[in-house]
Amino acid sequence: MRRALSVLCVLVKACLLLGLLGSPTDGARQGQDIRCGACRGLVDEMEWAISKVDPKKTTQTGSFRINPDGSQSIREIPLARSEGNLLELMETVCERMKDYMEVVDPSSSRKTYVRAVSRDGKPMDPSEAKLDSTVTSSLKYTCEAIAEQNEDELIEFFSHETDNVKDKLCSKRTDLCDHALNMRHDEL
Image (cartoon, rainbow, N blue to C red):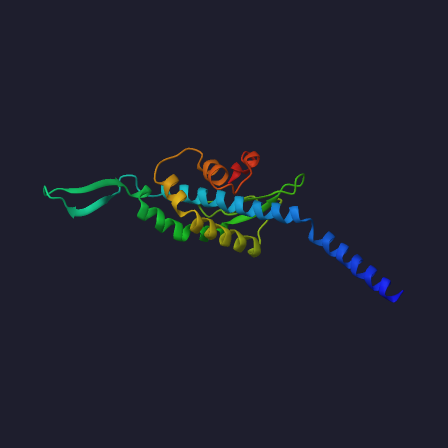
C-alpha cells in the first residue's frame, strides 16, 4: 500500500510539473518565436545601419597585385554594402537587441519583438509589451548565433539592395520563421 501511494505521488508530481512547464510544442514554438524575432530584428538593424552610411563613400575591392600588363584589378564599390563594412556591422548589430521588447499575442500566445526605443531615442508605446533583461539577453544571444551561423547569407543579401530581406532570409533561406507568420512580424 505504501509503495502504491509513493508511485501515485510521483505520478501526480510529474503531471503537475508537466502542466507548469507546458507541452513540448509550446517550448519549441517559443524557441522559434525568439529565433524569428532575433532574425527579423537583425535584418531591421542591418538595413538601418546600412542606410546611415553616406551613399557617396566608396571603397576599393579586388586584387592589389599588378598584372603582367601593368594594370590592377581594382573596383570601386559603395562602402555601405562592402563586405568589410557588413562584417563590421555584424559585430555590433546584436547589441541593439537591448532596444527591443516582447509582445505576446493574446489569441495565439505567439511572441513578437518590437523596438522599445525609437531610433531617435524616444520611448515607444509599451502597452501590452514586456521589457525584460532576460528577453533582451535571449534576443542578443540568439541574434549573435544567427549572425555567426549565417554570415555568408547575410553578406550575400546585404551586399546588394534586395527587397523583402526579412522574408527571404528569415523564412525562405534559414527557416527561422514560419512562412505563414511573416505578415504579422512586419512591425519590426
